[in-house]
Image (cartoon, rainbow over the protein chains, first blue to last red):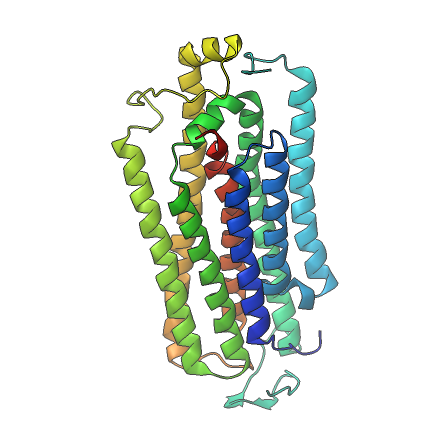
Length: 102
Length: 244
Protein backbone atom coordinates (compact mmCIF):
# COMPACT_ATOMS: atom_id res chain seq x y z
CA UNK A 1 0.00 0.00 0.00
CA UNK A 2 2.79 2.34 -0.95
CA UNK A 3 0.42 4.80 -2.55
CA UNK A 4 -3.31 5.12 -2.69
CA UNK A 5 -5.06 4.05 -5.83
CA UNK A 6 -7.86 6.34 -6.78
CA UNK A 7 -11.03 4.33 -7.23
CA UNK A 8 -12.98 5.21 -10.38
CA UNK A 9 -16.31 6.94 -9.77
CA UNK A 10 -17.93 4.13 -11.73
CA UNK A 11 -16.95 1.59 -9.05
CA UNK A 12 -18.54 3.67 -6.29
CA UNK A 13 -21.72 4.11 -8.33
CA UNK A 14 -21.98 0.35 -9.00
CA UNK A 15 -21.58 -0.37 -5.29
CA UNK A 16 -24.20 2.28 -4.55
CA UNK A 17 -26.63 0.69 -7.02
CA UNK A 18 -25.96 -2.78 -5.61
CA UNK A 19 -26.76 -1.46 -2.12
CA UNK A 20 -30.04 0.03 -3.38
CA UNK A 21 -30.99 -3.25 -5.06
CA UNK A 22 -30.16 -5.06 -1.80
CA UNK A 23 -32.47 -2.72 0.11
CA UNK A 24 -35.26 -3.38 -2.40
CA UNK A 25 -34.71 -7.14 -2.20
CA UNK A 26 -34.82 -7.18 1.59
CA UNK A 27 -38.14 -5.28 1.60
CA UNK A 28 -39.54 -7.57 -1.08
CA UNK A 29 -38.44 -10.78 0.65
CA UNK A 30 -40.06 -9.66 3.90
CA UNK A 31 -43.47 -9.53 2.18
CA UNK A 32 -43.46 -13.31 1.87
CA UNK A 33 -43.73 -15.78 4.69
CA UNK A 34 -40.78 -18.13 4.46
CA UNK A 35 -41.00 -18.97 8.15
CA UNK A 36 -37.60 -19.15 9.75
CA UNK A 37 -35.93 -18.45 6.40
CA UNK A 38 -37.11 -14.85 6.47
CA UNK A 39 -34.37 -14.29 9.04
CA UNK A 40 -31.70 -15.98 6.99
CA UNK A 41 -32.63 -14.09 3.82
CA UNK A 42 -32.72 -10.72 5.61
CA UNK A 43 -29.39 -11.35 7.34
CA UNK A 44 -27.72 -12.72 4.20
CA UNK A 45 -28.67 -9.55 2.31
CA UNK A 46 -27.61 -7.28 5.21
CA UNK A 47 -24.25 -9.03 5.56
CA UNK A 48 -23.66 -8.79 1.81
CA UNK A 49 -24.46 -5.06 1.90
CA UNK A 50 -22.20 -4.56 4.92
CA UNK A 51 -19.35 -6.37 3.15
CA UNK A 52 -19.78 -4.16 0.08
CA UNK A 53 -19.56 -1.05 2.28
CA UNK A 54 -16.56 -2.44 4.17
CA UNK A 55 -14.71 -3.56 1.07
CA UNK A 56 -15.32 -0.61 -1.26
CA UNK A 57 -16.47 2.44 0.70
CA UNK A 58 -14.29 1.77 3.74
CA UNK A 59 -11.44 0.74 1.45
CA UNK A 60 -10.62 -2.49 3.26
CA UNK A 61 -9.48 -3.85 -0.09
CA UNK A 62 -6.65 -1.29 -0.09
CA UNK A 63 -5.85 -1.42 3.60
CA UNK A 64 -2.95 -3.16 5.31
CA UNK A 65 -3.43 -6.69 6.63
CA UNK A 66 -3.13 -5.31 10.13
CA UNK A 67 -6.15 -3.07 9.60
CA UNK A 68 -8.17 -5.82 7.91
CA UNK A 69 -7.34 -8.18 10.78
CA UNK A 70 -8.42 -5.57 13.34
CA UNK A 71 -11.73 -5.07 11.56
CA UNK A 72 -12.30 -8.81 11.22
CA UNK A 73 -11.48 -9.34 14.91
CA UNK A 74 -14.19 -6.85 15.87
CA UNK A 75 -16.87 -8.65 13.90
CA UNK A 76 -15.60 -12.07 14.96
CA UNK A 77 -15.96 -11.02 18.58
CA UNK A 78 -19.54 -9.97 17.92
CA UNK A 79 -20.35 -13.34 16.32
CA UNK A 80 -18.81 -15.09 19.33
CA UNK A 81 -20.83 -13.05 21.78
CA UNK A 82 -24.18 -13.50 20.06
CA UNK A 83 -23.46 -17.17 19.39
CA UNK A 84 -22.53 -17.98 22.98
CA UNK A 85 -25.44 -16.00 24.38
CA UNK A 86 -27.82 -17.94 22.14
CA UNK A 87 -26.32 -21.26 23.20
CA UNK A 88 -26.77 -20.27 26.81
CA UNK A 89 -30.35 -19.07 26.46
CA UNK A 90 -31.23 -21.82 24.02
CA UNK A 91 -30.13 -24.66 26.25
CA UNK A 92 -30.66 -23.51 29.81
CA UNK A 93 -33.87 -21.55 29.77
CA UNK A 94 -37.27 -23.12 29.84
CA UNK A 95 -39.62 -21.53 27.36
CA UNK A 96 -41.07 -18.57 29.21
CA UNK A 97 -44.36 -18.52 27.40
CA UNK A 98 -45.93 -20.71 24.78
CA UNK A 99 -44.86 -19.58 21.37
CA UNK A 100 -48.04 -19.12 19.34
CA UNK A 101 -48.54 -21.76 16.74
CA UNK A 102 -45.78 -23.97 17.97
CA UNK B 1 -3.92 11.56 -11.64
CA UNK B 2 -0.81 12.35 -9.67
CA UNK B 3 0.88 9.37 -8.14
CA UNK B 4 3.89 11.01 -6.53
CA UNK B 5 4.95 8.98 -3.50
CA UNK B 6 3.64 10.61 -0.33
CA UNK B 7 6.98 11.00 1.34
CA UNK B 8 7.83 13.66 3.88
CA UNK B 9 8.99 16.89 2.38
CA UNK B 10 8.04 15.83 -1.09
CA UNK B 11 6.60 18.64 -3.12
CA UNK B 12 3.06 17.63 -3.87
CA UNK B 13 -0.06 19.41 -5.00
CA UNK B 14 0.17 22.98 -3.89
CA UNK B 15 2.93 22.62 -1.37
CA UNK B 16 5.09 20.57 0.91
CA UNK B 17 3.51 18.11 3.26
CA UNK B 18 5.32 16.95 6.35
CA UNK B 19 4.09 14.30 8.73
CA UNK B 20 3.67 15.09 12.41
CA UNK B 21 7.03 14.81 14.17
CA UNK B 22 6.44 11.32 15.61
CA UNK B 23 6.08 9.81 12.12
CA UNK B 24 8.74 9.04 9.55
CA UNK B 25 6.54 9.41 6.50
CA UNK B 26 3.10 10.63 5.49
CA UNK B 27 2.28 7.06 4.59
CA UNK B 28 3.12 5.82 8.08
CA UNK B 29 1.03 8.61 9.53
CA UNK B 30 -1.95 7.57 7.42
CA UNK B 31 -1.62 3.90 8.32
CA UNK B 32 -1.46 4.79 12.00
CA UNK B 33 -4.60 6.93 11.72
CA UNK B 34 -6.42 4.16 9.88
CA UNK B 35 -5.50 1.50 12.41
CA UNK B 36 -6.41 3.79 15.30
CA UNK B 37 -9.74 4.62 13.71
CA UNK B 38 -10.47 0.94 13.20
CA UNK B 39 -9.69 0.22 16.84
CA UNK B 40 -12.23 2.86 17.75
CA UNK B 41 -14.73 1.29 15.34
CA UNK B 42 -14.16 -2.10 17.01
CA UNK B 43 -15.26 -0.54 20.31
CA UNK B 44 -18.28 0.75 18.41
CA UNK B 45 -19.03 -2.77 17.17
CA UNK B 46 -18.94 -3.90 20.80
CA UNK B 47 -21.12 -0.96 21.85
CA UNK B 48 -23.85 -1.64 19.30
CA UNK B 49 -23.16 -5.37 19.62
CA UNK B 50 -24.52 -5.44 23.16
CA UNK B 51 -27.81 -3.98 21.95
CA UNK B 52 -27.98 -6.34 18.98
CA UNK B 53 -27.40 -9.27 21.35
CA UNK B 54 -30.20 -8.08 23.64
CA UNK B 55 -32.40 -7.80 20.57
CA UNK B 56 -31.58 -11.33 19.37
CA UNK B 57 -32.30 -12.87 22.77
CA UNK B 58 -35.59 -11.05 23.39
CA UNK B 59 -36.75 -11.71 19.88
CA UNK B 60 -36.04 -15.39 20.39
CA UNK B 61 -38.08 -15.32 23.57
CA UNK B 62 -41.05 -13.33 22.25
CA UNK B 63 -41.17 -13.74 18.46
CA UNK B 64 -44.89 -13.12 18.07
CA UNK B 65 -44.95 -9.91 20.08
CA UNK B 66 -41.86 -8.67 18.24
CA UNK B 67 -43.40 -9.35 14.83
CA UNK B 68 -46.64 -7.64 15.81
CA UNK B 69 -44.90 -4.59 17.26
CA UNK B 70 -42.57 -4.39 14.26
CA UNK B 71 -45.51 -4.34 11.86
CA UNK B 72 -46.60 -0.96 13.33
CA UNK B 73 -43.44 0.71 11.99
CA UNK B 74 -43.51 2.57 8.69
CA UNK B 75 -41.68 0.36 6.18
CA UNK B 76 -41.71 2.82 3.22
CA UNK B 77 -40.18 5.56 5.39
CA UNK B 78 -37.61 3.16 6.79
CA UNK B 79 -36.68 1.92 3.31
CA UNK B 80 -36.48 5.49 1.99
CA UNK B 81 -34.20 6.38 4.88
CA UNK B 82 -31.99 3.40 4.07
CA UNK B 83 -31.67 4.71 0.52
CA UNK B 84 -30.86 8.20 1.82
CA UNK B 85 -28.09 6.81 4.04
CA UNK B 86 -26.63 4.72 1.22
CA UNK B 87 -26.69 7.86 -0.93
CA UNK B 88 -24.82 9.77 1.79
CA UNK B 89 -22.20 7.02 1.90
CA UNK B 90 -21.70 7.47 -1.84
CA UNK B 91 -21.25 11.25 -1.50
CA UNK B 92 -18.86 10.70 1.41
CA UNK B 93 -16.73 8.34 -0.70
CA UNK B 94 -16.81 10.86 -3.55
CA UNK B 95 -15.67 13.66 -1.20
CA UNK B 96 -12.59 11.62 -0.29
CA UNK B 97 -12.02 10.79 -3.94
CA UNK B 98 -12.18 14.51 -4.80
CA UNK B 99 -9.35 15.11 -2.33
CA UNK B 100 -7.34 12.30 -3.93
CA UNK B 101 -7.59 13.97 -7.33
CA UNK B 102 -7.12 17.52 -5.96
CA UNK B 103 -10.61 18.76 -6.84
CA UNK B 104 -10.97 20.98 -3.82
CA UNK B 105 -14.29 22.59 -4.64
CA UNK B 106 -15.85 19.19 -5.09
CA UNK B 107 -14.66 18.13 -1.64
CA UNK B 108 -16.76 20.92 -0.12
CA UNK B 109 -19.68 20.14 -2.41
CA UNK B 110 -19.77 16.42 -1.57
CA UNK B 111 -19.28 17.05 2.15
CA UNK B 112 -22.23 19.45 2.13
CA UNK B 113 -24.31 16.92 0.19
CA UNK B 114 -23.45 14.26 2.76
CA UNK B 115 -24.55 16.62 5.53
CA UNK B 116 -27.83 17.39 3.74
CA UNK B 117 -28.58 13.68 3.26
CA UNK B 118 -27.67 12.93 6.88
CA UNK B 119 -30.00 15.70 8.03
CA UNK B 120 -32.77 14.40 5.76
CA UNK B 121 -32.42 11.01 7.43
CA UNK B 122 -32.80 12.61 10.87
CA UNK B 123 -35.85 14.62 9.79
CA UNK B 124 -37.59 11.48 8.49
CA UNK B 125 -36.65 9.69 11.72
CA UNK B 126 -38.19 12.60 13.63
CA UNK B 127 -41.50 12.15 11.79
CA UNK B 128 -41.41 8.43 12.56
CA UNK B 129 -40.82 9.13 16.25
CA UNK B 130 -43.69 11.61 16.15
CA UNK B 131 -46.01 8.94 14.75
CA UNK B 132 -45.03 6.57 17.54
CA UNK B 133 -45.74 9.23 20.16
CA UNK B 134 -49.13 10.01 18.59
CA UNK B 135 -49.98 6.29 18.59
CA UNK B 136 -48.70 6.07 22.17
CA UNK B 137 -46.38 3.22 21.29
CA UNK B 138 -43.87 4.47 23.81
CA UNK B 139 -42.67 2.05 26.48
CA UNK B 140 -43.84 3.06 29.92
CA UNK B 141 -47.12 3.66 31.73
CA UNK B 142 -48.59 5.56 28.76
CA UNK B 143 -48.10 2.56 26.49
CA UNK B 144 -51.33 1.99 24.63
CA UNK B 145 -52.24 -1.65 24.22
CA UNK B 146 -53.12 -2.61 20.71
CA UNK B 147 -54.61 -5.58 18.97
CA UNK B 148 -52.01 -7.84 17.56
CA UNK B 149 -52.61 -9.49 14.27
CA UNK B 150 -52.40 -13.19 14.93
CA UNK B 151 -50.60 -15.35 12.45
CA UNK B 152 -52.95 -18.23 13.21
CA UNK B 153 -55.95 -19.16 15.30
CA UNK B 154 -54.06 -21.67 17.39
CA UNK B 155 -55.40 -21.92 20.92
CA UNK B 156 -52.07 -20.98 22.48
CA UNK B 157 -51.78 -17.94 20.20
CA UNK B 158 -55.19 -16.60 21.17
CA UNK B 159 -54.50 -17.12 24.87
CA UNK B 160 -51.13 -15.45 24.55
CA UNK B 161 -52.55 -12.45 22.69
CA UNK B 162 -55.09 -11.94 25.45
CA UNK B 163 -52.42 -12.07 28.13
CA UNK B 164 -51.33 -8.60 29.36
CA UNK B 165 -47.76 -9.89 29.24
CA UNK B 166 -48.05 -9.81 25.48
CA UNK B 167 -48.17 -6.01 25.65
CA UNK B 168 -45.13 -5.99 27.95
CA UNK B 169 -43.23 -8.00 25.39
CA UNK B 170 -44.19 -5.53 22.68
CA UNK B 171 -42.86 -2.79 24.95
CA UNK B 172 -39.52 -4.58 25.04
CA UNK B 173 -39.47 -4.36 21.26
CA UNK B 174 -40.22 -0.64 21.34
CA UNK B 175 -37.60 -0.09 24.06
CA UNK B 176 -35.01 -1.69 21.82
CA UNK B 177 -36.34 0.18 18.78
CA UNK B 178 -36.06 3.55 20.48
CA UNK B 179 -32.70 3.05 22.15
CA UNK B 180 -31.05 1.55 19.07
CA UNK B 181 -32.37 4.13 16.62
CA UNK B 182 -31.71 6.98 19.07
CA UNK B 183 -28.09 5.93 19.58
CA UNK B 184 -27.74 5.52 15.84
CA UNK B 185 -29.20 9.01 15.33
CA UNK B 186 -26.79 10.40 17.95
CA UNK B 187 -23.93 8.99 15.92
CA UNK B 188 -25.36 10.69 12.84
CA UNK B 189 -25.59 14.05 14.63
CA UNK B 190 -21.97 13.75 15.74
CA UNK B 191 -21.02 12.75 12.20
CA UNK B 192 -22.78 15.76 10.69
CA UNK B 193 -21.00 18.06 13.16
CA UNK B 194 -17.63 16.59 12.18
CA UNK B 195 -18.54 16.96 8.50
CA UNK B 196 -19.33 20.64 9.09
CA UNK B 197 -15.85 21.18 10.54
CA UNK B 198 -14.30 19.29 7.61
CA UNK B 199 -16.31 21.33 5.09
CA UNK B 200 -15.00 24.49 6.76
CA UNK B 201 -11.38 23.35 6.49
CA UNK B 202 -11.88 22.00 2.97
CA UNK B 203 -13.20 25.41 1.96
CA UNK B 204 -9.92 26.82 3.22
CA UNK B 205 -8.03 24.36 1.06
CA UNK B 206 -6.58 22.29 3.88
CA UNK B 207 -7.03 18.95 2.10
CA UNK B 208 -5.58 17.66 -1.15
CA UNK B 209 -4.06 14.45 -2.45
CA UNK B 210 -1.07 14.95 -0.16
CA UNK B 211 -3.11 15.01 3.04
CA UNK B 212 -6.72 14.03 3.62
CA UNK B 213 -6.55 11.78 6.70
CA UNK B 214 -9.38 13.59 8.54
CA UNK B 215 -11.65 13.10 5.52
CA UNK B 216 -10.81 9.42 5.30
CA UNK B 217 -11.23 8.78 9.04
CA UNK B 218 -14.58 10.57 9.07
CA UNK B 219 -15.53 8.49 6.04
CA UNK B 220 -14.78 5.30 7.98
CA UNK B 221 -17.01 6.54 10.82
CA UNK B 222 -19.80 7.58 8.47
CA UNK B 223 -19.80 4.29 6.57
CA UNK B 224 -19.77 2.38 9.85
CA UNK B 225 -22.91 4.22 10.99
CA UNK B 226 -24.40 3.28 7.62
CA UNK B 227 -23.60 -0.40 8.26
CA UNK B 228 -25.33 -0.25 11.64
CA UNK B 229 -28.46 1.01 9.90
CA UNK B 230 -28.18 -1.68 7.20
CA UNK B 231 -28.72 -4.19 10.03
CA UNK B 232 -31.20 -2.12 12.04
CA UNK B 233 -33.60 -1.67 9.12
CA UNK B 234 -34.49 -5.35 8.46
CA UNK B 235 -34.26 -6.27 12.16
CA UNK B 236 -36.62 -3.54 13.35
CA UNK B 237 -38.95 -2.83 10.45
CA UNK B 238 -39.48 -6.03 8.51
CA UNK B 239 -40.35 -8.68 11.10
CA UNK B 240 -44.10 -8.45 10.68
CA UNK B 241 -44.28 -7.30 7.06
CA UNK B 242 -45.74 -10.56 5.80
CA UNK B 243 -48.43 -10.67 8.50
CA UNK B 244 -50.13 -7.51 7.27
